[in-house]
Image (cartoon, rainbow, N blue to C red; front, side):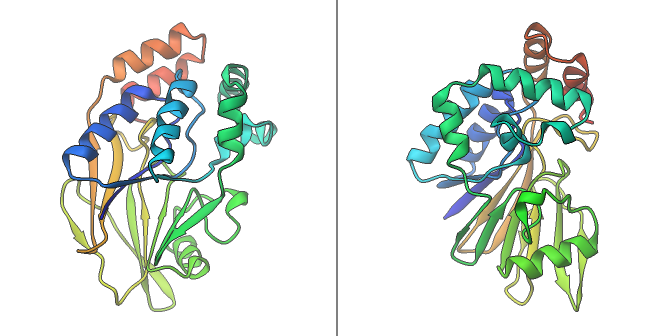
Length: 246
């Protein structure tokens, strides 16, 4: 089974549709959505409706910090732009969308795979995994052959190395064999708000049988997504981030 791993959608319908179409073309038979389904973007309801359809077909979904904030928590810890977007998102969600977000676990497993938004130790603390030491701690806590996470918005791949971890910067479109001799931690990047200087949407595809992981970047109509943000009255900064990928 090929599993499309998509994280940090952030209410960006154009980016989500583009990644789903690309994953279908690559033969994805299953999807895993790693949280931050809403927040920042102008289409939280439409995105959640699309994700609910995939959940009904067996997709895995976990909760992110922006999903938690949309339900009423964490907002005070956010920067002003994120806080404003959270209040806007809360006002847009109905009971159906809120029930979906409330039903999401902080992490979930499939065989020897673990899916989580942030760190696997205490996922509800929303730790950003940006260093090899944090990655080593996450992999040890996960006790999984491969852990998939998001939250950071920049694709990367860590592997267990002795008592620590090493880091590998993936090249989009180039398959990477994940040998069973090591534990792995894949940061999928962001579908809806990339922050690595590349405004193309990011996702990853994992082939369970071949144990091959491929990171992809998918161009999408970011101009339309940005115009929606402005028209909705959300902070202009959020639209500029889609243009610049930062």
